[in-house]
Image (cartoon, rainbow, N blue to C red; front, side, top):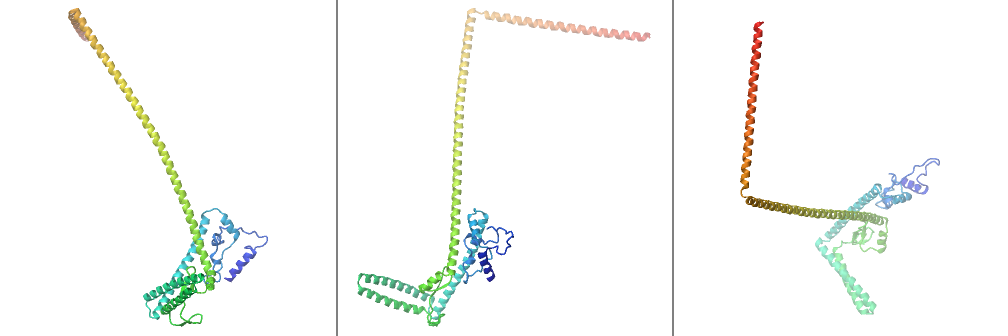
Length: 386
C-alpha cells in the first residue's frame, strides 16, 4: 500500500515515464486505455475521498492525469464515453448501497440499545413513547415562552419577562423529571464520567453516531470531516449524473415525439392531396358520365325522330299508293294476273328443258351400252378364229 502511494507521488512529481531511457521511444497513452482510471476521467476517483478514514479504499492502481481528463471531456459523446460513466455510476451506487445498509444496521442497533435501557428502568415501549411525546410538547412550550420573554424584555416590560422565565424554569424541571424516568441509572461512560447515558442518533449522510444536543464545535468538525464530505460528494455526483441522463432522455423523447408529429402531419398532407386528387377524379368521372348520358340521350332522341320521320314517310307513301290505285280503277289486278301468267310460262319452259336434258342423257347412255356390246362380240370372234 505504501509502495503504491510513493509511486503515485513520484508519478505526480516526475511524470509517468520517469524510469524511461532518454532515447527510448515512449508509447502514447490515451484516455481509452485500460491503464487509465475511468472514475477520475468522469469526475473524481473514490479512492481519493476517504484517505485515512474508516472507509479508506487505498491508493488507486490506475493513472490519474488531468490532461487525459481534458481530452476525455472534449471528446464527442460515444459508446466508450458512456461506458466510463456507467462504470463510475455502478461503483458509486454500490458504495452508497453499502452505506445505506450500514446506516440501517446502526439505527437498529441504536433502537435495540434504547429498548434495553427502557426495560432496565421497568418502562414499557408504549410508556416510553408517551413520555417522549410529553417531552416534545414541553420543549415546544419552553421555546415559545423564551421567545415571548425576549419580546417583553425588548419592549421594556421586565416583570412580565421575569414571570415568563420562571414559568420556563418550571417546565424545564418537569421535562428533566420525564427524561430521568426513561433514562438508565448512573453508569460509567466512555469519557470516564459517571451519569446517565447520552441520547444518540445516526448521521444520514455517512452513518456515524452523533450525540443529540452536542456542542456546535463538535458538530461542525463532523460535518467537515473527510468521511462525511466524501459520501456527500459521492451522492451529489451520482444525483447529478442521473439528472443529466434524465434530461438527455427527455430531450430525445421530445425530439422523437416531434419527429413523429412531423411524420403524422406529412401523412395528413399527403392524404389530403390524395383525397383532393380522388375527389377531382370522381368529379371528372361524374362530368364525363353526364356528358355521355347527354350524348346518348341526344342520339336516342335523334333515332326516335328518324324512326318517326320514316314511319311518317311510309304512311305517306302507302296513302299516296292507295290513292293512285283507287284513281286507276282496278289496273293493279290486271297487272298481277299478267305477272302470274309470266311466272307459269317460265316454270313450264324450265320443266320442258329438264325433260329434254334427261332424254338426251338416256339416249347417250343407250348408245354407249351398244358400242360396248359390239366391241365384246368382235373380240370373241377374233379369239375363235385364232
